[in-house]
Image 1 (spheres, each protein chain N blue to C red):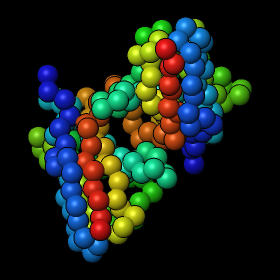
Image 2: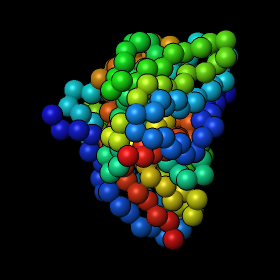
Image 3: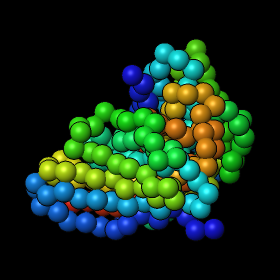
Image 4: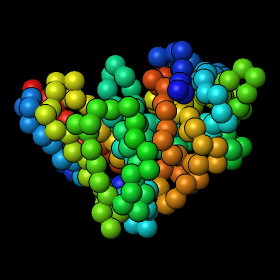
Length: 112
Length: 112
């Protein structure tokens, strides 16, 4: 079956702009989590959605937001981009709690 | 707040030698611990989780609650084990991969 798909794979944005990243989970998976990966901070949890509801949020400013649609696809949005937002953004999907999460290949965002 | 520490950024071993990747954590509750692996140009994937007590690809990891450690071990390293390894913690035991806190990772290099 198809894996977790993230689009686009690469993005270059200018400071102050906003960006939307997309994640299509594995068919049947209802939970989608987002992570930010940077060389300095490593992998950090952003938020997790289940059945269109945000269940938990990591320690990120309000500029980072997300949502999940009825087909379980998820988007995350970052407004007023800063240079420090440059990172690899990973999405992971799982069927339910206590099941393995499968990661996408990520979207590499560069803010200039 | 929870924290995961992987003290070694890079670990080089010879093929056939034993491998031990260290992971220490801090969390006041009963977490679930995982090891994730990322091979070159591949996605992050689950290697094993403490709750399942499995041996995957010859790797094992035992949760030591007294020492708050979850070290990954393999008796005989193979060249195909070369990869980036991440230790991760979920604050909800039995919750699977929900809201993971990752260590910074250890790059394992197996020398032929």
